[in-house]
Length: 364
Image (tube, rainbow, N blue to C red; front, side, top):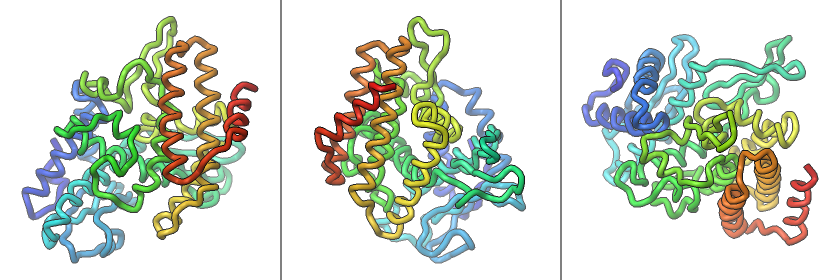
């Protein structure tokens, strides 16, 4: 339960909504059976987060008139601030948006708190990379000045929060009809959620989740039903000493963004994920401005993710981490979303292009 003192609201309904949303997310992120970890997290959360609800007409420096919610770090106060539009002054048909916004922004806050708790950095070629607000911050070691736009990962940070929000509201976790696996395999139009500006680009993120999956023999929903965490849980493969995360991307996006870089770069080369993520951040910027990505851009991303998925899964199969059946199942799940995206974005691949991707994987 959140400390009531960190929630600034005139209405008990808004406080209840925040506590209910926090409970749903903490069960999803940690697993419903992991009480000890959840208790530690809520204690840390209460010390480092401030939540404020505003009416429809109020504005702050960060919560602009057309915004429903925002999360940012107040460096001076050392707090993560969540600012939200509450129920007051809102039209009845917009009430569901409040719940979706609370969950979406709370997801951001969870990421930010994890980055505070697990702060570390990696130095490569004179550049320091550090987890920051659910993304990766890059600064020159000598001058401490930012590299480029300083942070990368905005595309994945925003779109994944929408996906987690859909999981938290439209699956059996909250009495819905869909499963976690449905949300990760179905197009956003089939989720039944309120749509936002990020919705049309969420398929890229679903394909990324599939590319990093280590789970083939059972479903994500089964893990949740058993009280486990699809974000932090691990599976022990037969004959292997090491326990592997259920999904390296899901873990990284919530708990440790640098982990994604390390896994992806292992197969695609040093700095490859930073380049991919920065490219996607540019797509995100245009999407928010009302300019949809071109199919050539979508194909480029799909090509890179297909190449990575092929290299990683084949490597794990050679090392005996995946059985042939798991290899085939993971490939099937990835290809299902890949085919969807060709239709969704009119980003079709020729046989020659597919053969080229396959040949690259065989050359490893």
